[in-house]
Image: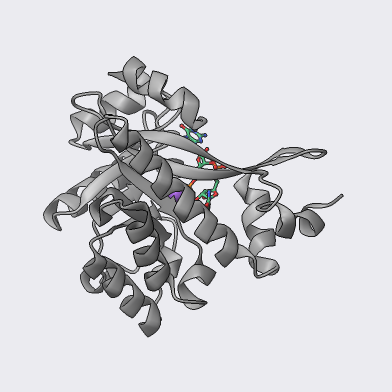
Length: 253
Ligand code: G
Ligand code: G
Ligand code: NA
Ligand code: MN
């Protein structure tokens, strides 16, 4: 069996899973959001990660089907937690380029939110800078998504086509500082300058900023001292199955 052969059957075989990684308020320590990350539990090949799933899904034109499954699953899970009395947390879902250009992403998302009865403000879409490259239909799609009331986050900020004009033209809510700038943050003055600059930029533009890849207490301290309010990383939690997450939330709080 191979990834390409089996991927189209993974949904009906119920082999896809979502793991969730918390986003933490660096001041209060509370979990304020969750990022849904896809996993594939293949019966023979074992646990398969997105770096192997997503490119194959794109190549096979399965990414929309899989992306829709991710959206629906993540929204359902978020709604279920809310119904069970947990404080509402923003659920982030990663989108790939093909989801923007094929099919009607906006109608799908609107349909999913209605079906699941999740308020749009609890859904955040993570897109990359590359996806904001000047394609008029992408801008239109983003504007329509914004008018639905969902949040838009730029993932891996600083590593793509960092055309700052995009920040002027796109209805963006969040900049997510790429983990490559966090890794050596404590030793590397260039990383420190970049991180400080992104935080200031976000602040001036009234955008939220999230640092990803926080692994050490030193990373945490630097970010907190420089007014980064939200973070994500192994220091707080790896991505985990939903059943472990509730323990994590209590643990972190
Ligand atoms: O999950 P990991 O922890 O290995 O994530 C690796 C990469 O895969 C990240 O860049 C993330 O944005 C991407 N990714 C994870 N889940 C999804 C998904 O459901 N859809 C898309 N398009 N990308 C995803
Ligand atoms: O591209 P995206 O930023 O969505 O992908 C996030 C990826 O980083 C996932 O593979 C996730 O498992 C991983 N990740 C999350 N937190 C950490 C961390 O603190 N350190 C490292 N090295 N990877 C992380
Ligand atoms: Na992401
Ligand atoms: Mn990222």
